[in-house]
Image 1 (cartoon, rainbow, N blue to C red):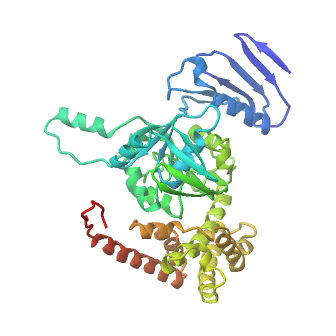
Image 2 (tube, rainbow, N blue to C red; image 1 turned 120 degrees about the horizontal axis):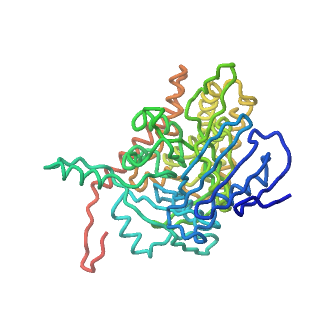
Image 3 (cartoon, one colour; image 1 turned 30 degrees about the vertical axis):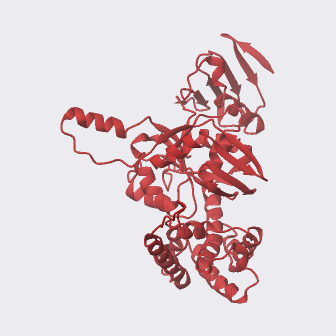
Amino acid sequence: KTSLVPGGGLNLSLFKSQHPLSRVLVRIPRRRSKCTHDDLPVGRVASTFFRTAYSWPRQEYGEEEGQEEVTIRRLSSRGETRDHRDIPRRIHLLGTGNIGSFVAHALSGIPSLPPTTLLLHRPSLLDIWEAQGRTIELITDGLSDKRKAFDVELALPKRTIIPRSPEAQAATESINQGDTIHNLILTVKAPNTISALTAVKNRLTPQSTILFLQNGMGIIDEVNRKIFPDVETRPNYMLGIITHGVHSQKPFSVVHAGLGTTALGLLPRYPFVPSNADGERNSEKWAPSSRYLLRTLTRTPVLAAVGFSPTDLMQLQLEKLAINAVINPLTVMLDSKNGDLLSNFAITRVMRLLLSEISFVIRSLPELQGVPNVRMRFSPQRLEMLAVSVMDKTSNNISSMLQDVRAGKQTEVDYINGYVVRRGEEMGIKCVMNYMLLQLVKGKQQMIDRRIDDYVPIVTDTGKRR
């Protein structure tokens, strides 16, 4: 039933349930209208209501772009009041490669789209962006779709400048500092994560949220060790696993070659949640920016995003890691497509030896002890079935690691096979096969780098380079 409350608000009395929130009140600035939900149940109605409240069109209220804010006041059954104020809608995206351009293009197609800013790490990309009409192109089944609802900023590493006066020092600091980043999606390659975050770490606060949408594992541990060592002041973290098949032929233009899904999960700030005076475990309080970012991505149809618990998300990560630890290094060493690894007895024997090591390491991880069905899920036979299935579905594709090696770029092998080796050493397990592939990929990468460095372009009489 519905009824009007004083001040022009709308009171919606919905189903009676034992939800911990006895009352939820949402206020939209400049409108002065209130919606109160008594005993709001968790379900389709709740998600629809909050999606509408957070993505209210700013044009109706004369809001300036980037200044939208929503205030939520939650009154619990114990009488506690918690205010989450000023949740900016702007999303910053660091990394404009295949995945970054795909995600930015997908966000620009949802109703009441959030303001999106692309953070470029090279000044040359800004010239390319201008030359291409400030658009991102997505090609699906030969059809091109260009969109231009993006802002652009340069996110360069901070340079050390010795100022001559205090005024020059203040000017230098103002150049290196920008507006606060509340919602950051990170899609750069794993080896470039530290340098990319270093350029924007001063713009991140404990209320900010970083979504790591990358291949490999062990990246967050390195970020905590080198950039955010203090658990109290570091931003909130989210993890994402994307299985869409995308590749690019030029900057800001990607081809959507295969449909997939996106798995998302919020990571707790503390590894162990402390207990209260009564001995009961306190529930984790997720940051408002994390909730907003998760809600925005899950309502993006193209991404097909679904939220998972941290334990379930880790198991999905390990499955993808096991598949990449086989396909990526083997295609690099053999310089072949994914499908060329199939129906080859010698390669199958190597693959089974690799998967035996990976399976043993994963099933021995202390994080997964006590989790049901781990031994069956990560058995060598099932991992082989998953790897063969991916090889068959992507038989004509070239792995991302082989693309990086051919282009002379740094690969992610340290965060794939290297992660298996490191975790194995922590538990006293020697991963000889993974260590060998790790060193072989690095060796081949150095050989190609030297070949590229020795290349001297020659300009012919016609003006062409060869």
